Image 1 (cartoon, rainbow over the protein chains, first blue to last red):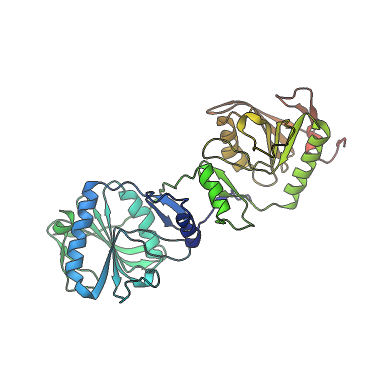
Image 2 (cartoon, helix red, strand yellow):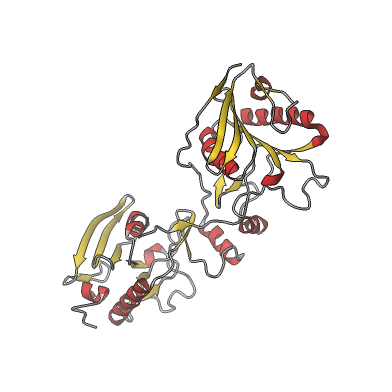
Length: 186
Length: 202
């Protein structure tokens, strides 16, 4: 059987070495997704505003109980280092300075999608589910809705629900924290 | 307020892979990003792992190498499985490159597209990649001639007349046929000598 040559699968340590030696320009917005180094699209104003709104809501909402990481990377296995727009991490006193936050630390990921709608849904959702990330929210600015993904399986999230303006949702990890869809979408 | 149950169908992943330049590719090699056993090429900005070399393939390249050496001594430089720099994001490692003769054998400066007289790929199992990816790559870089040695089918496919959209001419030759190079028309080599087996002369 003939097998076509395949793209080299980068490991996280190769990826770091490239960043350290300046091969990946510091201003390059890249992530490591399942062994591929992927270019992130430049972030627009609407996207940034939504991330900032979500940041304020979650920082206030979780207080000292968790860590809110904004556009910072998490480690998923040997070949994954995505940069979600917002990650709510289990609280750790060192704030993960001593060792990188992995999938076990993640309580919730929030991605904002405007132009990258397909990318977040098709590329990142399966990746997050495969690593057992318990909950993923995608705030879709174009469709004006919030997609809540739960029940991760190796093949993707089993439960996806659409929430529109007027609704409110609570993260699984913070059942008493009600987030209004309007407040995220702006 | 309504909450709807949605089934999202995941389509094939759409990705925008980061495109590496040749310089970045070399820096990665120097920084030890690749392990010594990684056989890689840079094709259109992507790092591609070459298939491990099987015996039929290695034998095919050995035979081809000899066939050219006996005919091209002093007329050209034969470079087996060495990197060839093409456009800014391409550095393949063709099985054999026939290059314009240079007295230093390209020790001081590697070959550029204009130095290439012929590129040859040997395929024992899959010709798909060599046909689908390598042929257009070499054509858009203006490589005058590309031979695909298909050991499985016992054929040599000759591509000529490069254009940005691919080679304009493609001809399949079987045992019994004789080939010459566009850039070295006085040199002839039979398909039998390339493939080996019956009717081999050397």
